[in-house]
Length: 237
Image (tube, rainbow, N blue to C red; front, side):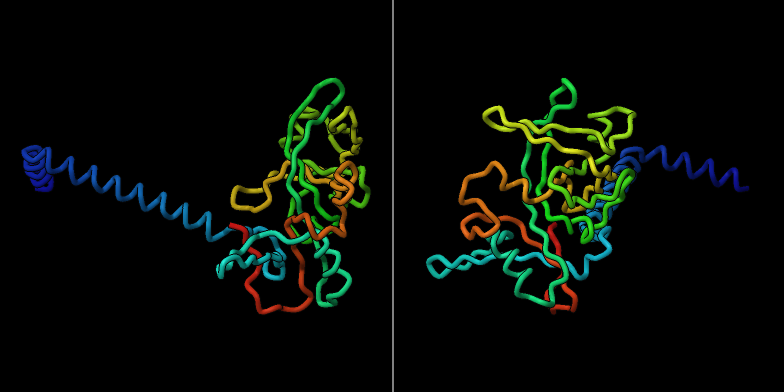
């Protein structure tokens, strides 16, 4: 009996091939769109959630008023970081963050990579999984790189403690020692940098007025509060 019902159903369907194709094709597109929409929502909803201190980290911005119009910017004067650190007791840690880039030499091979200057507390505020070292960055000659860069530079060898030379303008060089290797951050993290070094290195070969007391130049400024501020937590999506 069931076999007869199936045969009748199949014969009936075969008489309406175009109708069946349209329905199946339409349903397949709908399901695919729902799956893509979910992954897109999940990616954005989970932005920076991998950082354990996310709820107490805040980003300092600036506002410009021009012709009665207010424009918000996600950066702040460099000197503001030092001013906050010295004058705001409720702030636990202050981190300046300046993305840059550079050319590096390992033995005789040359590489190009992005390089971000950060204060030593950067790896305390944000969650990175280190496979070598701990990312203290207490020394200006220390640098932390991600695991992909470590493989690119040193292959299967351990990168911790290895020398790395940055090539600067006018034939100048900066010598680093690798102090940590961390796993590459997920795509929904604000910090996709390949290499991080001490923020003071940004001043070493810069213009004379480019100092930690400069209100002319700007950078990204983040801090961790000891107590809730009432402001939304850090997001950079």
